Image 1: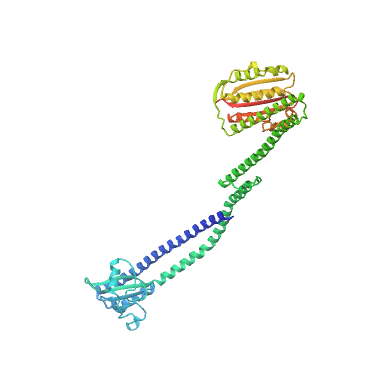
Image 2: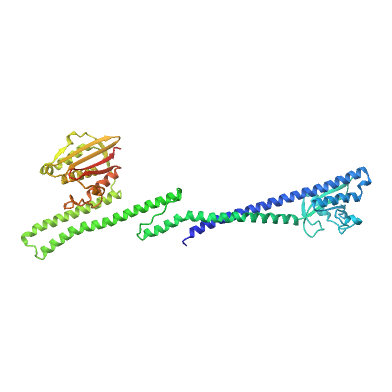
Length: 475
C-alpha cells in the first residue's frame, strides 16, 4: 500500500510503452505485408507479360526460333530469377508448357496435364491484381498473376505465374525477430530510466504523506527536502512553509493556553483565598471591606481579560467588520490626550509636538483606531517617569499616514523588543508588576493595524525612550 501510487504510475507508463511498441509492430507488419504482396505481384505480372510478348512476336514472325523449347527456356529462366512457378495452359486450364527444370528433358513433368481452375484464373484477371488462392491445383494459397494468350483476337490460353506465401511469411518472421531483438535493449534501458524517474517523481509525495501523518500525531519536525525547481519542488516548498506555519501556530497555542492558565490562576487564587478567609472568620469584620475591594478589583481585571480575549477572537476571525469613515485624526488624538489630563498632571509629564500637528483626514474604522491610539497613549503615560516627556508626530507621505508616539523612561531591553506584540507578553522590569495590565493590549493594537492593511513597529533604548509608530494606507 505504501508504494501504491508508484506502482500505478510505473505500471501505467510501462503499459503505454508496451502498447505503443505493439501497435508499431502491427502497423509495420501490415505495411510490410502490403509492400511484399505488391512487389511480388509486380514481379509475377511482368514475368507473364514478358512471356506473352515473346509468344506474340513469335506468332507474328512465324519463325522456328520461337518453338516450345525456346518458350520453355525463357519461362525456365524467369522462373529461376523470380523463384516462382510459371505455366502456359490452354483455354480449359490444362498445363501445356511448364517452366520447371524437369520439363526440359522430355517436354513433360509432374505438372503437365494438370488442370488449373479456370474460374480462379478468370477471377485473377477480373480483379485486376494479384490473388491469393490455390488455383484448384496447389494445396496452400499462392500469390497469382495471369496474362491471356491471344491470336488474332482469339483466346488461346493463359500464362500463369504463382509463388508460395511461405517466403513472405518467413520474411515477416525475420523482420519481427529483428524488431523484437533490436527493441529489447532500448526497452530494458527505458524501463530502468522509467523506474527511477517514477520513483523520483513520487518520492516527495510519499514524504509529504508521511509528514502529514506525523503532523496528525502532533509532530511538526518533518520537512520535505527540496531537490528540484519544478511544480513538485514548489509543492514541497509550500508544504514546508505550511508545516512551519502550523508549528508556529502550535507553539502559539501552547503558549496561549499556558499564559491564559497563569493569568487566570492568579486572580482566581486571590479571590478564592480572600472569600474563604471572610467565610471562615480568618479575616476580621473590620478588614473585610478592604479585602472585598481587592476581590472586586480582581473580578474587574478578569472581566477585562475575558473582554480582551473576545475582542482578539473577533478581530482574528474577521467577525468585526471594518466600518471605515473619513475623520480628522488630530481631533481624535487631542480628545484622547485631554481625557488623560489628570494622569499627565499627576506625573508632571511634558507633552511635545501636539500643538504643531497638522489636520489630516484618514479613512479607517474610527472606533478601532481610537482603541489603538488610546492604548498607545495609556502605555506611554503609564511607563513615563515623573517629569518625563511624551512626544507626538503625524505625517502624510506617498499615500501613507504615519503616527508616532515617543516617551522617556526606562525603555525596553533590546532582547525584549521582538516580543512586545505577543499575547500576554510583559516586559519583566516595567510591566509585570502592573496588576491592571492583561498583556493583550499591544497584541490587539497590532491586529487592528494589520486588519487595516498597515504596519506597526517599536523602537527603544534602555533608560532613554520608547517609541511606537504605525503606518496606514490613506485609501
